Length: 203
Length: 238
Image (cartoon, rainbow over all chains, first blue to last red; front, side, top):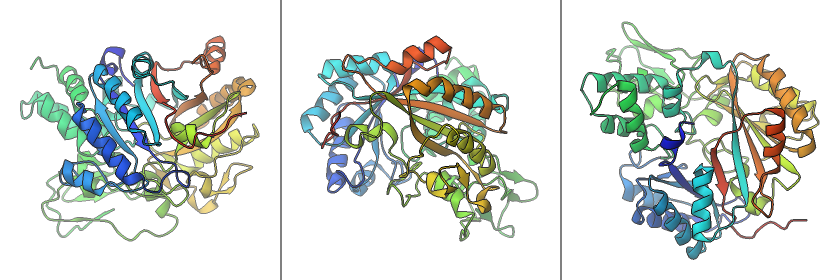
């Protein structure tokens, strides 16, 4: 969730096998996918099976540990690089499922540029039920960047206070919020912009 | 998760990391075990200076908390981590969701609040009344004692999880029934849920469900996920 302008620069490529269909031997392909994305400008790469690069002690260790049945992703901020990455994945012919998350208009455009015809779409129909119990939209924009709910509201508020107290910059705050997102899908660059607004700082 | 009280120095480092806000600091830090969903985040992230946090052995029914809340737990049904279901992400090879129908994901407890199985059951039973069949390769389904009725095992009803996904497909012609039922569920539970709709795209790239949602006034977002259709073997379609 979030405003369109903010979401335009938050696009995620995910690659995964399907258990029992094409998962055997997928580990090497998933690792190669991450390397391709990293080389094409992904700001973060991640492995939902074993944890993000911070948790696993560095990017190289994370890459070494990628195994069959992993679900891996790469975060981009530049739509042009996304189109290049999709084309590279198509040419690599991994035979695994590629899922692109972002603004539909941007994602469709990137697919068209890469010569890829989208197969299935997943749309959000928003939040239902006791929405009165939820924190502000700004806090939710940061919390929901992690699809597994690991970026706690308490941590977001703590980081905002530390930015206000000039104990950290919004960029450092974005990296701090990235750490508990085990799959590594959290976009610290977009988070820094949101934190800048929340903390009311121009720096 | 537990904190060894004799070791804790009440530094407060662990408290912000809990997605459920289950850690309170007084003279020492204490975890409210009723609110704790065993997600593991405090242990992984807090960097406790005295190593006071530890994962106790989990026994049934508390094990369900970890299964559905700890993103690094690998579920038996699907063999994957995260929430443990492939959903639309592998639809190019599974053909789980076909043209003429939509895949529905109801993520109980997301965002932020978490969900107890009493509320998950209310939603599941309401959906079961529509005659849906819950996805078998989904860990939430595996916790049902009667999937046809949407009933869960009695001993987990008070267990809390970060989120639990109900997953099924429904014919496009029944979308209006679905939304009416979702509205009734929304009014009956004490948490939130997020709804997503998966659609196999038409040959021209259009999404038939969109026209139906626009007609009946259901909001849908301008961002989400697109499966690029690159996997093999591609599922055969009628």
